[in-house]
Amino acid sequence: MEVLLLKDVPKLGQAGDSVRVADGYARNFLFPRQLAMPLSEGARRHVQALREARQQRAEQHNQESVALALRINGLTLTVQARAGEHGKLYGSVTAADIAEQLARLHGAEVDRRKIMLGEPIRDIGQHQVEVRFSPQAVAHIAVVVEGAE
Image (cartoon, rainbow, N blue to C red; front, side, top):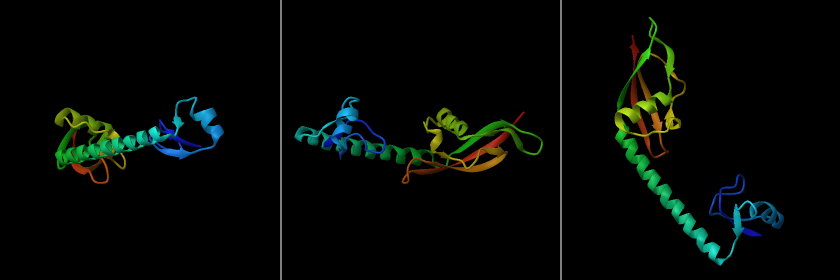
């Protein structure tokens, strides 16, 4: 049976995909949970409209990501952190701290998972950090960690 997925189903497909599944799986699992509907001519048109809308959202998101990456590329953030005598921090500067600073100082809402830190910053000094929104939208920022009294 060919069905139209209304919601994302793991290991089967995304919303808007038309997939072929066993009749029992469709009747007993997908339809009662409103995850899919039988594929008809109207549903085929609906699938096409969903694909176009998804593609349009993806293009818009990509354009916004590139614009944000250009806006924050080359910025220098200064972070105050408590440090010991030899320049080692008592804690660390994490991606969440950097995202918070970007939002507070520059109004750039960046998800902490987009900030590529191999490991948290634990030393005073300047560190280069990559912010990867997508393969086409990458920004490099400098994070200066200063010791707080």
